[in-house]
Length: 215
Image (tube, rainbow, N blue to C red; front, side, top):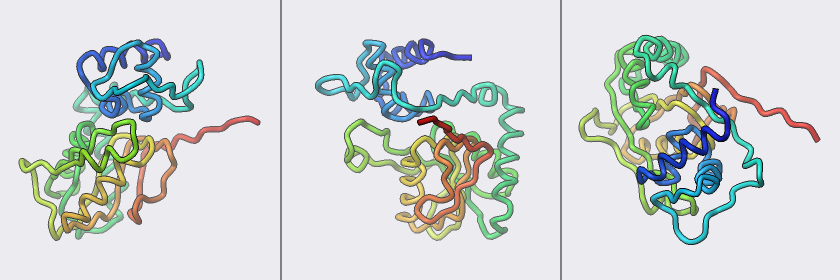
């Protein structure tokens, strides 16, 4: 089991490889605030750093939950079983859906299994790699890979691994709609927000994380 020191080391390694704070957040399945805090504590400099380092929390860091599902991701059999369970959550949405959209990076292999289980085509969306300052997402933008299926005029499912803030899922749903597609449902392994929907589209998850605090 990883502790905070391990996450700080991981964040430092990713920053030294040139990843932005958003990409580090994606890799570690934590929020942007947590990624920034981890990088700040490591002393490394992420690719998108500008000006002074951001202190995203006190000595103990921001409130967040790290999700490590590498025991699933590194084994194709386990990944297939989890993808089938996610497909089962979507099956009740009907037979008209003919496209599954995977959010890169981690959502794409899950979407591949789901597409096979539900007999749909496969698309892949690369989201804007979230920078620290609000507004950067609009400046950077995301996009659909031309190596996969097109979106226009099709009903689809949207697949990711983890919901941390819901920003990436919302961005993808809106990108599908902008391309003329109709998202019918989203599915993730872990939802740290307990979302029922994003942009009017229902969200299903295998695991909901609920924080319980004391006054």
